Length: 269
Image 1 (tube, rainbow, N blue to C red):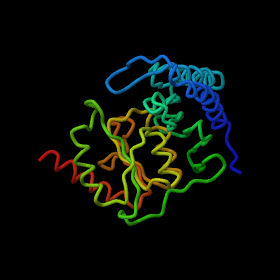
Image 2 (cartoon, rainbow, N blue to C red):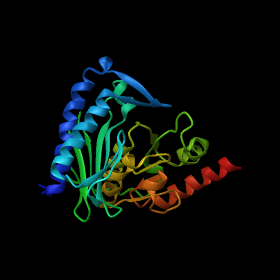
Image 3 (cartoon, rainbow, N blue to C red):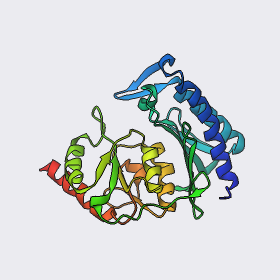
Image 4 (cartoon, rainbow, N blue to C red):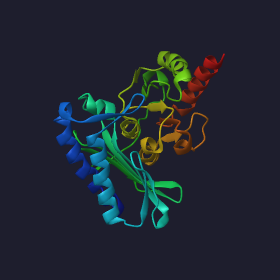
């Protein structure tokens, strides 16, 4: 059984506590109060409640650390070298429509580098976690990315831009380039879980643009510690700044990069 560090214990404890609240609210999803947050993006009472729980638990354990939160934004801490990056409910639209595919994501950034991350699916009680240099795990099981090298055999995932979100002008062309070359393309609406699934070998690759740091941060270390690759479409490593992500098992990273480049070139033509 994998021995979790004190940091991972703090992160998983906060995620599980918030997860219990989300499960209760999911059971009463039709009665939730919901307000519009922006085009195609919703915030629910459950979302803000989950964030409050995580904030409280992490502050209790590490009072000096800062935060980057989806709802509350940035909170500076006394220790400016460390901050938590939190998505209290990734897949809010799924949640609000009663679709049982959503997650909590918590990452720890230290001097600009992600050093630990957890992605928790409370309905299935799947806790994906990783720590720099210690590997990636699903609950107590060690994770490894898939070993597929032939793109024709690969199952890949993506996120579809909606209502003017960044990438809308390129996505159709990217999809047209990739779909004929792979076994299938999936879109389930929770980028944090898509990245965790790449780490677990369930998907062979995942690409999306227009993401926020809290959608990406925990997934970065999960994929890396599971032996995969995660970059921007150009191959650079500034995903948290650009919101552009290509994650893969490593073997198909080059072919996926070329197909995305071809799609974007066609869209510009």
